[in-house]
Length: 260
Image (cartoon, rainbow, N blue to C red; front, side, top):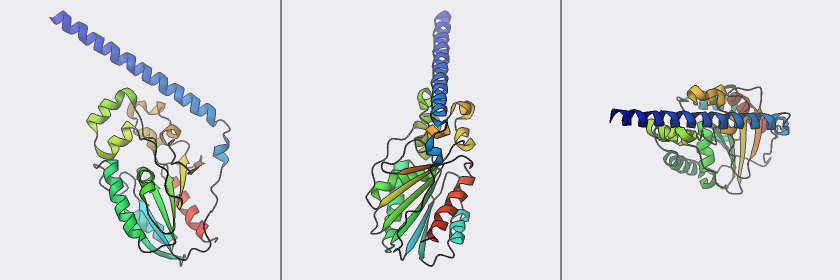
């Protein structure tokens, strides 16, 4: 009986080791492919251009927090940046309980956003920061406004991690939004015609790698962000980190309103 147990245990260890090697090989190939495609890629050279309506008379801003991005600091930064814009007529600061699943957080956001939109804005600008960008992308097709909705995600892990053989462990060890991101995210749905979506992405991102734990070296930030909303546009920021891209994009988008 002891020999039988040892034999079964040995097989389990060997299979686990083989699957681990397989996962690492696939991850390494994926990393190589992305790096090869990125070599001189024109998408890195694409720059965001202002596409706003000059006839906008009232504007609202929405901030969707990232994981652990708590407190009033971020929305206060947005308020400070927009002080010179006389068209600003309201702000919505959306935070959430990360222990809830994406569909629960998304439903709450849609409800709050659609209520906010009833104030009659000509334009609503949404900033979805990191995981907040997932919430914005997941919910985009359900957002309703008589005016323009412009969504900007920054360094958002839109694709999730899709950890393959480690999925069972992710499902067991994590709950809520973190679990959903770890297991991987499905393609997003096409939003209404009045919704514009811009994905602002990092090229290297230690924060996104961090969530891969011991296998961070095999995680590719570009692959983790590679799940755009249909009809959206993407822009890469090679010089920005996960943290700095937030301020870079916010300043760019808000300054763009001063030009029209």
